Image 1: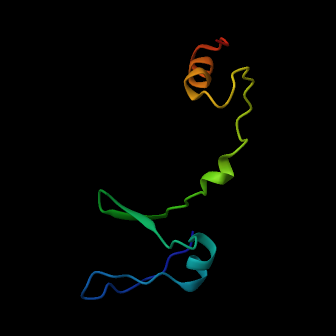
Image 2: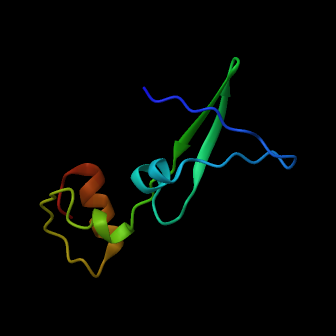
Length: 81
């Protein structure tokens, strides 16, 4: 565990060490801030591009992909229409 003391400015901002930003923050630079008792927890928000999810779940469907209603029905029921 690494602990550093930081000062909060008059607008409530705290700067994170550059090494932490480079290691933990993505290009969007977003974090979530949570209060838990007397603790303030800062966690990076790691968003993914939707294209990273393509082909991430194997499915075996018989329906014609041009008819999304049939595809949905087959995925939900497991039966080809």
